[in-house]
Structure formats: structure tokens, C-alpha cells
Image (tube, rainbow, N blue to C red; front, side):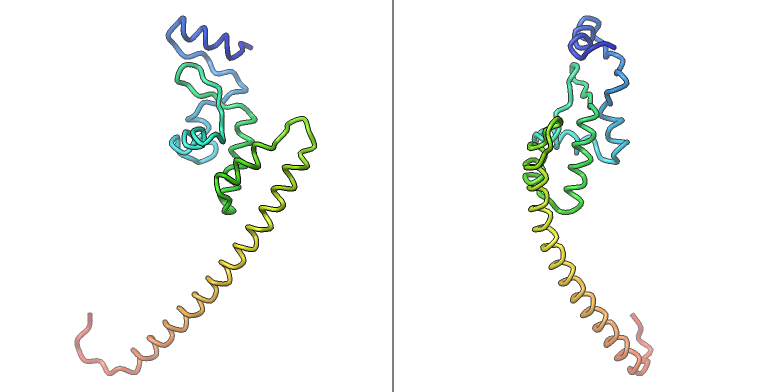
Amino acid sequence: MMNIAMAAQKAAEENDFPDTPADYTRIGEMAREFDVTLRALRFYEDKGLLSPERVGTTRLYTAEDKRRLQQILLGRKIGFSLNDIKEVLDLHDPHGANEKQFRLVLKKSERQMTRLERQRHTLEEAIGDLKQLVADITERLARIQPSGNED
């Protein structure tokens, strides 16, 4: 299999894109696989969260990039900031035990859980208030004599 430097050299010489090796994924495929936009992938790259290989203008994503994107998307889903996500990702050591990373994830997760539980409580109160309002208005409307003027 051709390495990335050889592929870049070949592309430059032939003014063409190389065949993507099986262990690389192009940006469009990556976007489809993770149901994200190309713009989102470029944004994560600009923020230093992803670092795909480059062959000319073509971005080639590795299995490690896919793992990072999965973690980015999970972090966003549970409400972590991009800075929090980057801080966690930057601690990853593919050959280490990652104890420091795990401790940071645990700390941030516990903090986020508290925030989300507070938000849920606030939402439950708002839903209860809204249900009561709908019931009150429905009852009042039922007592009003039809006047023939309907909106």
C-alpha cells in the first residue's frame, strides 16, 4: 500500500488524486458515515479537533480521526463545549492507560450531569405550568357562550 507521502508525490506529478487506500476515508464519505456536514468537519479541523492527512486539497481521515469524531459528536450531544472536548481529546495516549483523560472525563461528566438534571427540573416545571394554563383556558373557553364570531 502506498504511503501518504508517496501518494502526495504521485498526485502532484500526475495532477490527479490518488486512489484512497482502504484505511483512509475521504471527507464526503466521512460526512455521510457520521451524518454531519462537510462544513462541520472543516470546522472541527479549524478548531484543532481533527487533523486529517492532506493530499493536495483532499482530506483523508484515518481510523483515529473516526474515533475522535465519534467522541466529538458524543461530547456535543451531552452538552460539552468544544474546549472541553479538545481538552479531553488532547490527553488521549493510544499506547497508555489514559488515567488522566478518564479522570477529566469523569469530572466533566459529573458536572454536566448536574447541569442537565437542573435543566430537566426547570423543563418539567415549565411543562407542568403550561399544561395547567392549557387546562385553564380550555375550561374557560368551554364556559363561554358561542357568539357566532369565531377566529
